[in-house]
Image (cartoon, rainbow over all chains, first blue to last red; front, side):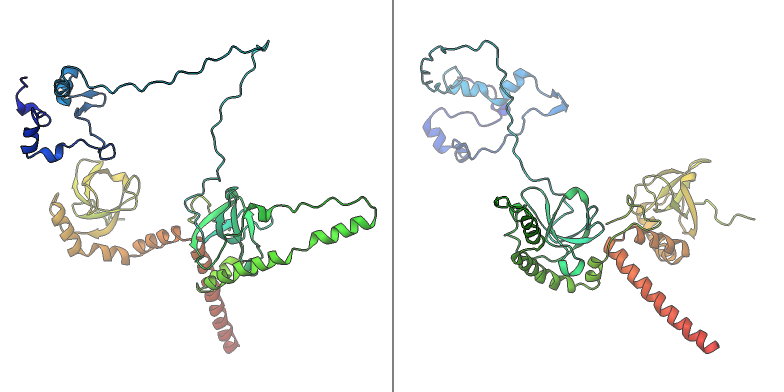
Length: 265
Length: 133
């Protein structure tokens, strides 16, 4: 078998005997690569401009060495045997055809996941709440819950904001960060903040209403304790920074001359 | 009134419009009635319309179109950076930039400092008023 001048081969010609393979100094690089070893191959056909390659189809055929692979395999490109397809079991025709075509609902492969957290919001960031009871308050961000809402705390002693959930859309993230390493927020999730389900009581009158109202107003003691433990570590790291405590205690407001689109938070 | 700041080779100017807004550049050549060739240590030498420049008082000693190395040496020799930063115009711009880059926390701290300063001033004033009375 004659090959074209070896000057133009992209790689050394295939070996004609096993001896040649052993003696060749390039043998080491020629071992068959396991599927994991392969580096993704860069194109052998550089672009002149996008969409137009430098080499024609016949030149590329030669460059890729398909002629050498075919020669090695006796004239035809080496093929894998097709895997035998297991014969599908014979299907019986259905007993019943509905009169009208029933439309199938479209496939929906979307998964529910928590809202994408803005890059500027990281655990310990000071946030400004923009709406609700606590609008204008500067609070410390703790973590994002699985529902996508942000878990936030005042701390309660500093500005009266308890452990609370807040929506990312109603928040401005400042670039001030508080050290949050001493705080454990593992136990808080959306269920902790959900409304408590009340057991159904027997119907009564008069006394029934009064009794119910009294129960609703007080906060359970364990929630108060949770607030205290979370805040204890936080307040220690807040007091380490001068003025940060009074900063968190003050509300944010726009003053004359402040342009929100030009302010750096 | 006679003109005091002339367009000439070596005049330092401030760019007041465009991509290089706020930069100090040196006029190294005059192209025609409207345009000058300007250069600065951190930009590629290029043409700019005079309308985009505001001339400063600072002038350095260079020949027409020096190469970058010579230009940088001449800027050092003329002490342009310090002259600019100590001039009232230069100081104003620095303060403006600082104010624009303030954090929300920084603004809060400044508010506290202003209140404190005003309190001290008011105390002194009260003292002086008492003495005068």
